[in-house]
Length: 89
Image (cartoon, rainbow, N blue to C red; front, side, top):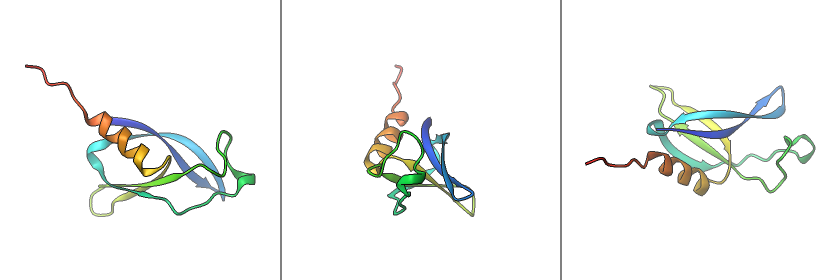
């Protein structure tokens, strides 16, 4: 299943937000991100209390890490709710 999240991407030292769609079957791990964004350069709609998570994706031999907006518990809930499917019998 696919889930939409908001990714924090550093472009030229300036943090930007963008939508990202993730295949939940490729998620390996979700961890609390240890990064802090300077409040003066914080994207609109966020403040210094905003938490970020790193999502580790299976991408062949290299893997891929995305930094998204939200604590790990919220990201895990979004991923697991996207995986729920109705069984048709």
